Length: 447
Image 1 (cartoon, rainbow, N blue to C red):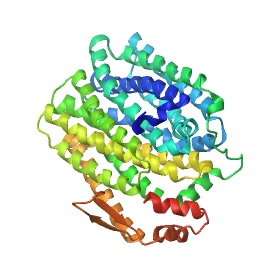
Image 2 (image 1 turned 45 degrees about the vertical axis):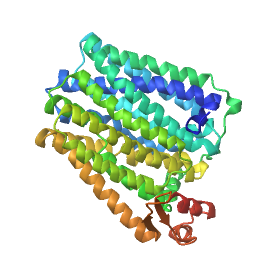
Image 3 (image 1 turned 135 degrees about the vertical axis):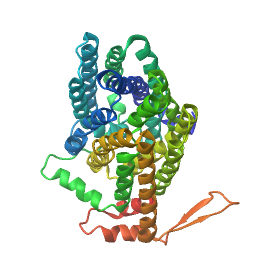
Image 4 (image 1 turned 180 degrees about the vertical axis):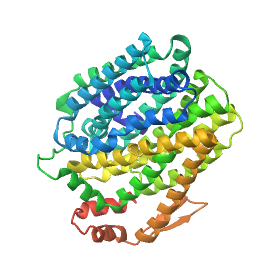
């Protein structure tokens, strides 16, 4: 088996990968159907309403993810995932039934989006850390990359299928199909071989565990840099559902099928980025910063595209840059975090990554309505450029490394640190004693 797909040789991960692909296709179908329902049936092309839906779906991350991280470090993750996946399926079926009955109103969709956001907030940290139970530690980077590949393969398939189904049978049946798709994940989780699981250490039940996770992150400058970059890009740049819907509907005068196709084309770049990520044995902070800069350039070009066709083509590099950034951030944090702290650290990661959306989505929606969808994309490009350049300057000054480019040798880009410098600085920055020698070395290697 090639290095790209090496994690698939493990039975439990194969089950997870296949079932997650099915469920992710359904999830992407629902996202497209939900936005289209709000944009074209329940409102008159309201970007603000779509932004509010997005915000409600991600707002619970701010309130619940920290507690979910503690639960992820304490409780059996497989059983928690069965519960959250079942709840997501019930909500999708409920919304579908409401739409098919003809009684759906905008406030109903708001309520379902909020409820789904609560479930997703509990599901996220558990899902992120559960990967480490299915594969050995040396395959974690590959497994995380393949998870992203599964998600983006679904993103490639789901929006296009959703567009066709919306045109053929309406949005209600899309929600019903998504609800049924969660059964695949529950079935796979129930069939896993528990004796082959790689059990992670569990945190004991005691007070102050959330504060302990925060102190741990405060002592890790590499994790802080990643979180700052991801939060800014997520707030203003990763609003593709909203901006693509507005571009398709308002700027180009297209229908549901063309809107769904934009999501699928974006996923071409994302899937390519995910497969490349699966081959990396150890991503670095510099890859997060570099891909954020690439995202800024790609979205800036996309905002200027004059036609639907050129805009669709510009989605490919945007998808590649955004997925590379997200996967590098996720894997770097997981691989350099103490396993007993991983759930809490990943919950904080989810807060700054997904929790930024409730803040950014309504703002971006307002910009799209007031100044046009091109400016809504442009503001994401500008902020990504500022944060990536700012992070690079800060890192060079504080981690004291030099960057050089070699035309005739591989690797072309060479980053050089003073011997032991990054590790020593990490230790000195840890005034509260959260970092040991191994963690300090992880900071040096992750950078």
